[in-house]
Image 1: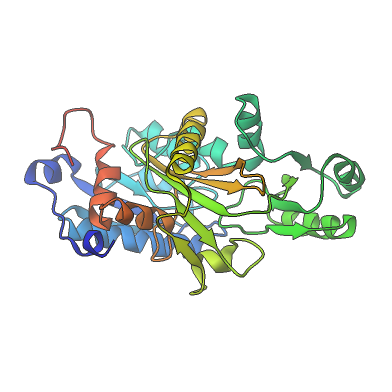
Image 2 (image 1 turned 90 degrees about the vertical axis):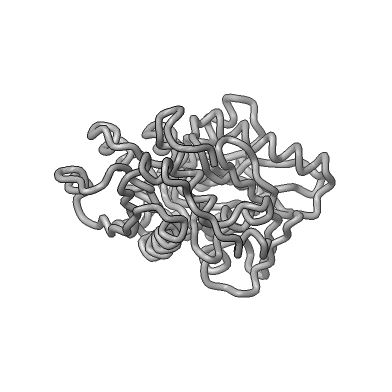
Length: 324
């Protein structure tokens, strides 16, 4: 890992010219603004260190303003949450004819909506925990009758585990619903999987080494993701080789069925019987010093600068720039 982190990576003149001036969009107005600012700063720094003509731009406010008089050739999207990760920005950039990193509008919108992502998983026969949509408090009784405690309650269209709670009773379910609905009126309730958590990063449509996650929190929540120093990351993840290959393939398939492009991250749980369950897909994963995609890339011998250049280079037409 240290070798990948410290290795100097530079783009060649041909690639630098092909990429042109790159705006790193960050910040925004979502609940994940602070995380996005950290991601954007890390991405900008890594691109500049690689020799790319890149600059950071906080795009809070009207996203349409970003394409009125563009002073850039392409965009590295480091916006998390609504606006930047849900297809809105992708649609605006596509309509303006400006190349951008990551998944296109439809896949971005779908992955941002955890409920509809699970409908796609279920429809494609991919394993995902049993779930229900919750639109009103008076639906709690029917949901309790259908699903088994403990349950996970989360806003369908938020990220970074914002508004997520684990519940064990009907009253807790109602209270958690109220909290989740304050973030998004569409609330997802699903059966809680007790067991180890893993995450699989995707780079140029291939799986990177699996990371095992453990925390003293009830789950890998916002604090564990971005603030705590005692969250434990296992690379190698501790699974047998065949098990790691299995969930890598499962993650790539999940990314494929939602239409993901170039890079992302897929979260997976293992239950007590050793079965693996898909939770969600992230199409603009975090790129902070606590983030999992850079960590997985390092385990594969790919430093941060090389990682962001490879993501960015996929915005070029085939044949432009040198191969990374």
